[in-house]
Image 1: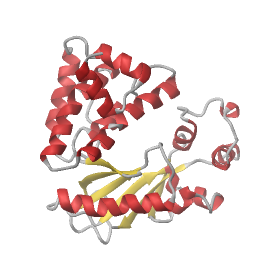
Image 2 (image 1 turned 90 degrees about the vertical axis):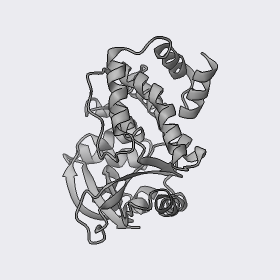
Image 3 (image 1 turned 90 degrees about the horizontal axis):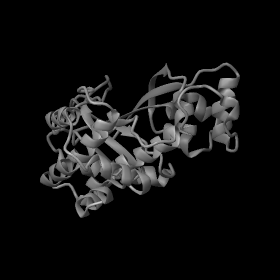
Length: 273
């Protein structure tokens, strides 16, 4: 591993066997697929895209390599906006976390969430304390959304959802975006998550998840049968649920609803900032 690779992996929080595999990817010249993915990433940087990048003909491994090669450009872009290096690093460190999650889910090096990481690389998603915030054009009709911009809220898995941490994260977002993106006022935050399924708050009313969900007005719900299982157990699909642990109240609630023939949903909610 070269010194420049070590510096990059420190920025992205890539460690252990994932660092070894990433070093191998960077050891040669980029393939046509990697170059195509890099072109896509450069075209999106600073354009405030709402969704994942298209595939661009690259496979999973090529996307990992492209994300690795492009991350320093995003870090420099953040710096050009005056964004503090620690916020840039906290944002980009999700790549290392996603590599570790992939290893847990699939038992191998890889990144099945590469599309999610293309949002970070577009320069409009930031980790501020406990939560991630994605500045995008307004997606839904709310009474406070006249400005045309909103903050999509995302919840990394690596920490508590205590009310104090969530309060601090929202307070940071309220100061951060007007400072660095003053021409894009976002008076509303939105969240699309299985954690906003009203069933969860009813069955775990004293939990941090319920406290988080109560911050939002839930506008609608849509069926998402596998999301609760994936984010609770990091298992894709609904096979072999009887083998999953039921050690915590959350694990029991997630599985018992399915046992009873229920379907987990995504709650689509908003709050005023």
